[in-house]
Amino acid sequence: MTRRQMLARSAAVFAGGVLLKEVGEAQGAPPPSSEGNQRPGADAKNRHLPVHTPNGENLPWKMVDGVKVFHLITEPVRHELTPGLRVDSWGYNGRVHGPTIEAVEGDRVRIYVTNRLPEPTSVHWHGILLPNGMDGVAGLNQRPIPPGETYRYEFTLRQHGTHMYHPHFDEMTQMAMGMMGLFIIHPRDSRAYRVDQDFALLLSEWKIQVGTSRPDPGEMVDFNILTMNGRAFPGTEPLLVRQGEKVRIRLVNLSAMSHHPIHLHGYKFLVTATDGGKIPPSAQWPETTVLVPVGSSRDIEFNADEPGDWALHCHMTHHLMNQMGHDIPNMIGMDPSGLDEKIQRFLTGYMTMGHTGMGGMGTMGMPVPRNSIPMLGGEGPFGHIDMAGMFTIVKVHPTRPAPDDWYEHPPGTVAEPAPEQDLRRDGIKTG
Image (cartoon, rainbow, N blue to C red):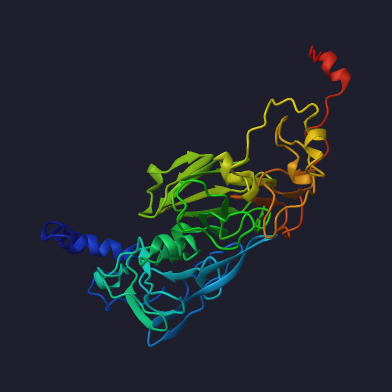
């Protein structure tokens, strides 16, 4: 840089912000300008790793005169929350939850929304900076979208990060029925945010009365189905990772009432971003559990250096129970001696359960009401995994695994019964 250029740059600081604009452009940020004047998209050589939404898909788009054009359709959807439980819900484009919208900072986006619901709706682009008339709050920023009508939203993306979309008309009902989705905006210059795997998980909660198929929008406390991307374990798709890859997991919480402390086994990670944007590296902090409040997002990143099949789940214990593990009588410590025989005179096949704990209930194979699921999980390589709900598995294998591959543990690395000679050697008395 010449002395004249240095003097000119110094003068810009005192002139009021020109230097900030210049530095922003050097870092890849779009120049501040009026709506509609920013260049859409990233440079052709600046590749962005697509986000993977387990159990989901991305919303297709097409480029029209430099604008990315999307089409969302709100409609009733018959949706499987987990094997054995299907619900009559509402969603977008035939899905619960809606397809992930993926774009790049600086893009001009045009999103058409067609309403095929039996009532009006709107779409709020949660956390996204945009003109007031595009914010989607019915009655405040726009008229509601009537059934059968199509509205157009259009704005330029002036930020990057992990965001979401959902209705802001009758949102208590419509969100409880499943209407929500992810909106991921990549930075214009992706080089500082490179990872090898980029996953996104949308957290939600439902109340489905046993034997029914319609979510209850009026529930405020006793949610009995907890989901990641609209699925409860064992219906959740695992996150597949090759050992040595750098992994980002975007966690978004659009539950009605519950915050979720999401815990990853086997690793510590850095909390690298919120829905407000990227956290500067000097301010990122390590965790093994990150709290994701309602209506917000958290990005975590880690290096997948320890192989295995690792649990990723909400650490609120009732959020790891499926439908029939809620609102049951407390039988712990009860002496059922003679009770079964007495009750079986009136109810054939009755059997007292739960007085010694609830473990193993998922393997008993007892009949349950129509369109209902037992309280606990699915099968793993060592037997039944007695966790369910907001639970999935991060599979870190030496080579990229298939969804049904289980980690092969090296000899001597699995917990097993302690040999008697080891107990004697180490002075452990069990009697």
